[in-house]
Image 1 (spheres, helix red, strand yellow):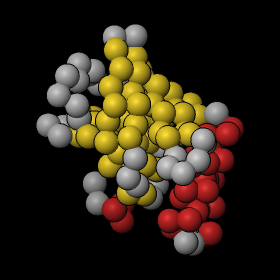
Image 2 (cartoon, one colour):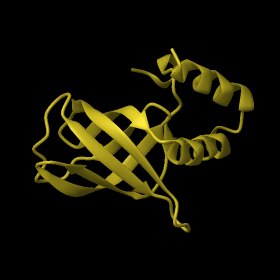
Image 3 (cartoon, helix red, strand yellow):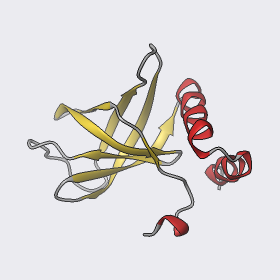
Length: 119
C-alpha cells in the first residue's frame, strides 16, 4: 500500500521494541510506528503467525516514558513484522500522539487520524 493511500501516517523512529507473548519475548528494531500499529524488524527466532496476540513496548529515548500496545500480527515478511494495535492505554496514546504530532507537523492531519481511530 502506498503512503498516499494510508489512513495513518507512519513515523520512522529509532528505538528497540520489546515484543512479548505467552511463547516468549524478543527485542526488535523499530522500523516505524503509527496511531494504528507498528512495524519492526523480524528477529531470527520469530515464531508468531497471523493474528497472534502480543504486547509491544516501545521505550522512548531520553525519558522513562514508554508506549505499550496490545497488538496482533497483521503481516509477516522475510525481514519485517507488522502489528495492528488492538488496545492502547491512555498514557501510551498520549505519548504516541505527541510523537506523531512532532513528526507530522500538521495539526489537521493529526486530528484527522485521531478521529479515524474511533471509526
